[in-house]
Amino acid sequence: MQGYVYQRSPGKWYGVWDGPPKYDPVTGKVKRNQKARLLGKTKREAEAKLNELIHATNKGQFVEPSKITVAEWLDQWLETVIKPTKRLRTYETYESIIRIHLKPSIGAIRLQQLKATDIKRYYLDKAETLSQTTLELHHTIVYSALKAAEMQDMVQRNVASLVPGKPRAKEENADVLNNCWEAEEARKLIAAAKEFGPQPAAFYSLALDSGARKAELCGLKWSDIDLEAGTVSIVRQLAKPGSSPVFGPPKNGTPRTIHIGQDTLELLRSHKARQDEIKAANPSYYHDHGLAFAKEWEHVGGTRDTLGDPLQMNNMGQREFRKIIEAAGVRPIKFHGLRHTCATLALQAGVGVKVVQERLGHKRIEITMGTYAHALPSMQQDASAKINQILHGK
Image 1: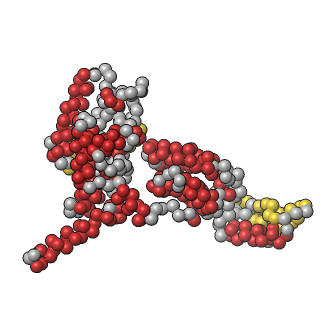
Image 2 (image 1 turned 180 degrees about the vertical axis):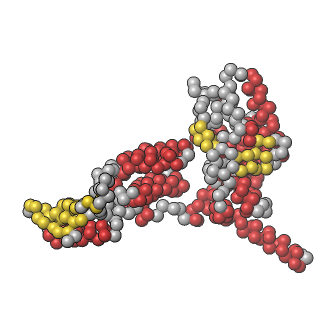
Image 3 (image 1 turned 60 degrees about the vertical axis):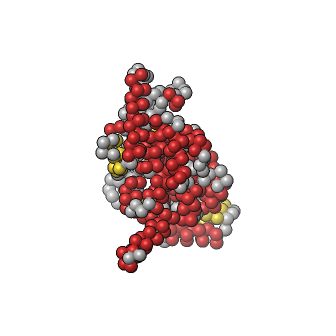
């Protein structure tokens, strides 16, 4: 007999059934593992739920009841799954989102009682204040945490899989187009950056020239730059700024070397000469981490700020970059838009997709093609014209 129901008191029917087998750790023999649970107010209701539990048990889908909350599981998942496997910056980003957003909203719900409607309501509430890209990151966290819970038999299924979380391709392309400059706008930005000093001129010119990510630029050291060969090697990214900075590998874990244009190289040489002057004039106050781009006097405002320390990545887009955009008189875009601009202009100039992929450090060429699909039609038209010239001489 797999199970039965019985009435303990009026309006309380219990079910008893054989749960998943348990093994004696000493003898290895199977120990009887009977389950008992309050299932309903009537016999019929209790029998129906008992049949569901027996069916789940037979299919290996039975989940032990647990009072653990979503907040408790997210904390456990962070420490046992994310912290040992992800980069420090990723861990800190996840921890911040969980602490500030997820736990106050859905953290008090028991993990096994969390429904798809709870998650959907959370996304709708947050959509008023957060961008689609940010919401996608929230969905990644929720989905991954619940997937881990499902794999550990803590929940019967991952309810986040029932809630659409990935933006449509049209929305992704719109985000790229809204944060991408034409060539003339990029030139105006570089011209304006020169008025702010040698370091901003070199920094923003290199960002547009290389397509490197902000954390990669902030983690760049002079030892990574070969001014004679005209190359920049992306071998690390800044994970945490401060007087004792923490660095990590590039996003996909693979270093890459990029060839840089002569104008950007000249700006880098001018910036290095100016940085060497600052070091020489402030030997006891300059923390030399070997960084190509580091705090200068205009960045030193608080008691913890010191010359030579890494640039504050989180404030860069809101402060210096915004001021240079205003001075240049161009459309405001996100800092990541410099990377989009680099890729789009390169593709429109006829640079091969594979070369652009390697320059950006994308793991797969499909990522490059999917992200910058808007630039590919012009390449097809150019290819058609060249083939026509070869075949027909006109």
